[in-house]
Amino acid sequence: MAIPVCLPESTKKDVNVDITELPSTTPNDVVNHEPAASVTAGTNVSAAISEPFQQVVEPQPVPPPGLPLGVQRNWVWFYWQMVFRMVFYPWMGYRVSGSEQFNNSEGGLILSNHQSMLDPLLLPLAFGRPVTYLARSTLFEKRFLGAFLRKVYVVPIDRDAARAGSLREMQRRLEQGFLVGIFPEGTRSVDGEMGPLKPGFLALMRRGKVPVYPAGIAGAHLALPRGKLMLRPRRVRVVFGKPILPEEIAAYSKQQDAELIELVRQRIAACAQAAEAWRRGGPAPEGPL
Image (cartoon, rainbow, N blue to C red; front, side, top):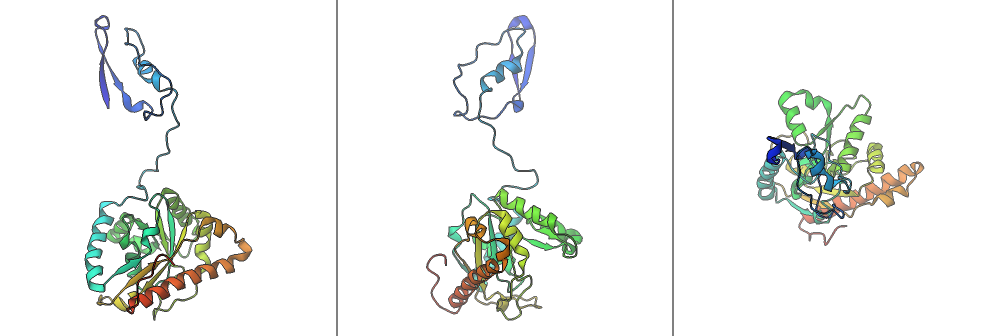
C-alpha cells in the first residue's frame, strides 16, 4: 500500500512511500525510540520512516503458499462437511467421543481401524479443522475427481513407486498444524473386525513428533458395506483415545518396531471395542480411553 508523503514546499514534489516493504511489528516489538522528527528536504524518506523500526523482534515464519494453516478449512471442505453432517447425524445416528481433547494449535496423527469407504468422512465430522489423507495416485488422473481431492487436502501416493515424497509432504503438513489420518490396516475390513497393521505408518509416527491419536469406528461396515454403493440407516459411533505422546514413541527403538505396532494395535482396538459397545446401546465412554 503506497502512502503519499508531502515534503516541505522547497522540494516542490510528493514522494510515495511503499510501507509494504517495512518490517511488520507490534507495539511490544519496538524498543526505546522517540517519535520521528519532521522530514526535511533532501532526506531519504524510506530511511527516515523505517529508522524507528530497526530494533525489532524477528518476524514469525509464514507458511508456504498453497496450503492454509492446519486450523483452517477452505470453502470446499466446509461445504461438504456441512452436507455430511446433515446426512450422517440423523440418518446414521452419528455420535463421537473424545474429540474435545485435540489441541487446535498443533498437528496430530490419527490412526484408525478401517471398516468402510465412509471412514475418511466420519473421522473429521466433529472437527472445525481439516484432516488430510493419502490416496492412490490413479484417482488423481481423473480431471474433476483429482481437482476435488486436492481441494480437500488429499495427498497422492504411488503404491508401485518410492513413497518418500508423500511421506515428506505429510510430515510437512503435520508441522503446519494439520490433522493427518491414516488407516494402518491398509484395506477395508470385510466383516468389521480389525485386521493386522502394516508397518508403513511407523516412519511418519516417528518423524512427525506430534501426538498420535488412536481412533475406533463401529457400524460403518453396516452403513456402507464393502462393494455396496447405497447408504443404509445404521447406527455409527466413533471414539478417540488418549494420545500417544512423542516422548512415548521415542522410547521405542527401531529394533522395537514390533512392540510399537502392538501398542498402537491395542489402543485402536480398545477404541473400536468401546465404539461397538456404544453402538449396541451401551453408555458413551466417559472421557478419552
